[in-house]
Image (cartoon, rainbow, N blue to C red):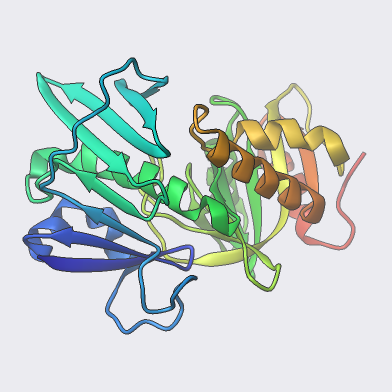
Length: 301
């Protein structure tokens, strides 16, 4: 069995596959993150060992009990099972059952995917997304539901409920602000590094907008967007920002250990990165307000 290696937010991942070429074709969004070992910038516990290994062509049997959680993603229902620290993720589409088993230490993942069938693309991405979230949580890493813009190495992370204009606002940035770029449009990864520096990374997942960039930037602020008839920037918000940040974080609600790690990381981020609220129309004036957060004198009410 061969392996493909990827680094996402500095974390080293391995996928065991019977055909690296076919698996790479199955996951084109992972291509910017592919690396060849030896690779020097991996994470603990061993710089030469992957943080997680994902395997296909296994047949994990799910527990004989009711699921502890049901999650709907892109119209597909996922059933989550827990037993002895292990986690099973199961979905059934068109009469075919796909299942993944996470080991108790969240380092090893087995699935019945062949990893070479083009019809498995959605399911492979879904399983890898969940596996990544579970594996990296102990390393102060989480995924936000957000859109991220970068300029000059500094980033603004725009958060908010679906329909509040996150993607619209970053598109306006790309239209009106020279020198900026989109880091990720829906699923960026935020990590507190070993030296306590906070960075936001691109990811091989990006919602409906293809933006799979292996880049990073230092967040200047997190911005909670709300639709409004006027453009008003307020903050920093302090403790009231914690709730919206937690709601924007991806996690398995039924896994208490994972939830605890996400809560801890969200609190650390909220204490170190200022959070603002931008009520916006949206238009060029709204972009000017959020752009001011990259300066020493933001236009705050």
